[in-house]
Image 1 (tube, rainbow, N blue to C red):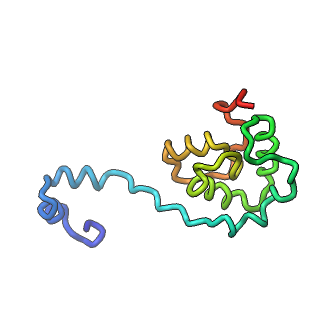
Image 2: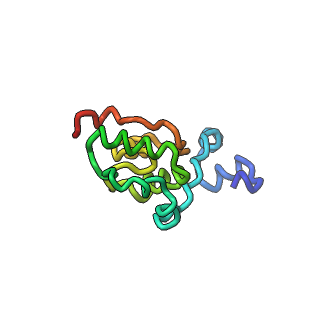
Image 3: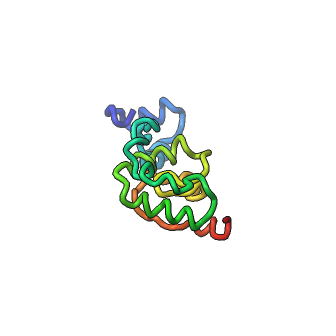
Length: 130
């Protein structure tokens, strides 16, 4: 309503709250826009992972995860893969977009608005999970 030019008094009156409540609410940061929908078929055949069939992308072994993440570093579809992993692939095991399942869950819990395609490394929570 405020973006449409309504005064704070009119908004408060309409919502039956105080003008102070409206002012405080309007001072809060806007939530991030939703991430774009990414389908697996949009990127999977262009990924660098296809060139490395010897790697187990669904493993819990930290050594294998580190090898997978090293491949992800140079992948041309890293951003799409990471977005997929953080939206639709949350329940999937293994490495998606250079992130392990624990790293993806942590990013979602922390409310990561932007999913940067850097930070490739072994997750501390998964050390010794081999």
